[in-house]
Image (tube, rainbow, N blue to C red):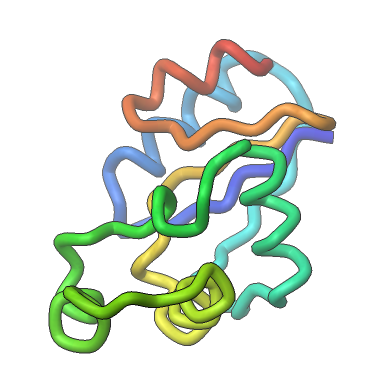
Length: 113
């Protein structure tokens, strides 16, 4: 089952969701801004994306600049920051089995459908 971690307030996330809808495939929408993600879920996503936690951070976000920018944070601290401030996560994130992609640009989502 395809899963999209979606923020409806984000135009790229809405575009990504539309790409999946247009594919005709079944998918699940996870509105991560409304339901906080567990540490295990976030670690699993990062592992599937094959990136470091810092690579998933939106570094221009106010919460990052005010609370974390310039600090030498561990991976666990960065993950905890994204759990506490979900707006810090890049989006949309799409998972299809063992494959995952950050849909920036959204057209990248087509690569894993």
